[in-house]
Image (cartoon, rainbow, N blue to C red):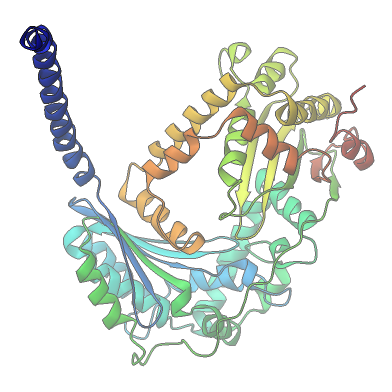
Length: 477
């Protein structure tokens, strides 16, 4: 009888044994397939030198590369007396060094077929070069030279002073730039973040070589620098180059003294109005205090900003747009264009919306904008958030399609986070955000908060600040 019972279960035992073998084989296959996927993602290698300089690279073996110096200093490190000196220094870096004249520098870059560029923001100054992979050592040597050994001659300073003043005139004709400068000036009044990047005209006319050298020695510190590279960049070779070119024994080295600390900048709910009826359209920006780069709410606010989206009259089929505010703007002709923004700094940020409209439609547009803000805090749906997540993740990845974009991403993240957040990690974080997360975070940052408002142009119909403040919450019965 025992043999009969065993024989009855033999087919089932053989079947279970077969299933186990299949599962074991599939597990081995999945592991075998996973290994190449991991290996095919170029890692971001980071090295911190004894001087404090950080070197970070992503090498995917291409024939071109981008290398640059990211410095944790911008207009936020200035005072009212020297506002504009950071941007002035960026211009002077290309006007010759102790080793090269301006013409020699330009010829050397041109002979390499490379490009040399720079920009200044409120928190960072960046010098970078795009070149062939074989010319990376030469490009790094040139970058080190212009950052450490800028000549700062009086003739060059006076010539560049005129260039910057003309640049200021161009910026003043761009009303979007003007409105955001006004928004910062009222939102962060009394703090360094209220400063413009270019500085006031009086400062530009007065800046001299001593002011530039003082700014260099105070802010261009090794532990404020990241040397980033992407494309055909050998990490070990770049580390060795940086150790040689940025050594403390370099006679051109300007690094001395302690690194100044950056004080927190407070946000003030307030408004600034610049009425000018000669301007054909009204430009208005409304913002609340957002989150800093390292705040866990930053990505959720980015999703919320994506939910608001952007629109202008040139877009076709706006009435079928998935964004509510875009549909309303198209259907009722509320504005010419609008765009949401989420500007982050180390410890704070500006989250809001900027729109351009006719002078008689400001009130209607403001009402719809604030109604949409309140809806984000209370009624946003899961399907809307899913669409915004996909759009934000896609835009994030699409922006990293060149060595320059990746290099910029590495340099900025090393200064902001102290490490590189990989695109896969960033995408995973975005995809984990739910509608409840968006409602909770928007309620925290937007609901019943004092906004900053800036208006330029024919803004007579822009609602009174108390009225705008009163529409930042809904009374429910």
